[in-house]
Length: 443
Image (cartoon, rainbow, N blue to C red):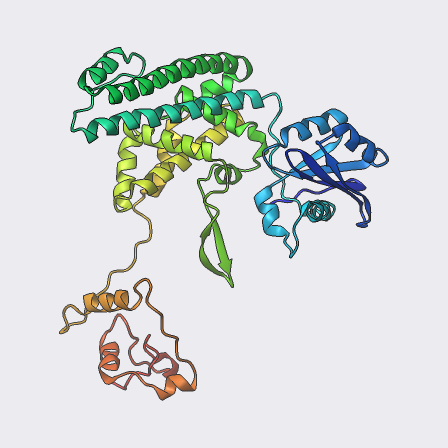
């Protein structure tokens, strides 16, 4: 987690809402100078309140749904604006009481203490294009729901669904209406088909406008993205406008984390307890790179065979193998946009072959002692049964308790007789101890 460093003498925290905002202004020592509510989000009245301090003032608010206008207004007024990451801020501050007055005060304290986790302020000139792209994606999802409903309706009446094409649906519509004999179901089907046709027209218009505008503002980067396997026109638009500016990611690790392709770890006392943060980041980029990985795995002559080998190495887990391919593609996109270079398939192949290298360390196979066949398999089965999920693990005995409860003779004998497991007798008594923790009998 990164924090914003405030360098101004005065700091302003705003608890922003749709129809009002609670304002708190403090100096470096934490003295409250302004603490009041501004109704109807009157920005001109807000400027009057901060007039004595705006020469050296930083304004901060959380990234709720209505921050666009405040960011643009502060930029127009020459004020430094910081957008706080709402989820991270919630994890930092807490208290028994929570209201607008308390929230604005805590936000100001965090700002003057350099404890604000910043979120990215997307450039105002690119927001309309990104909104247009997300609107297109929303229409595609709604159209998919209608198509799935028609498909399930055909299966519900034991009919073979008619084949369709994306652009021309006339023959498909005729086949559907001809197969439906009930007038009410036919009316419902006509309504769904009319909505699908309307979505087709709107999506086509949006795609044409997005293509036209993209070629004007970011034609080079758009062409670079389409050279990556699995990334076409739509996925290229999504990746381009969801990233914004690639310079905002200092390292490729930051970029992968923002794309939801890596998870964070939970560690304590030097031990990793688990993973977290799978849904922290941009969901559109996660979807785009996931789709690109599937398409590249299906169509590309180099990525496909390597992905199949990777999937076989992971025990047939398609999700994990696709995630690895998505990470490789995202790394390639990061350096391509950073260095303004085209896609190099040889580097991608070399990177994927590292995951398939035969030199990776494999666990040592269990060896069975002479005269006791099947011991290794029985030991593995006993361990798996003992440490099965959901089973309470017994505590380990130490000190006097360990000496007071020696191992059974059968276990001790099996440990002593197994050469790969226990160490044999040596000249040093300290070395004459098996891995089970008991002293070995003299040979």
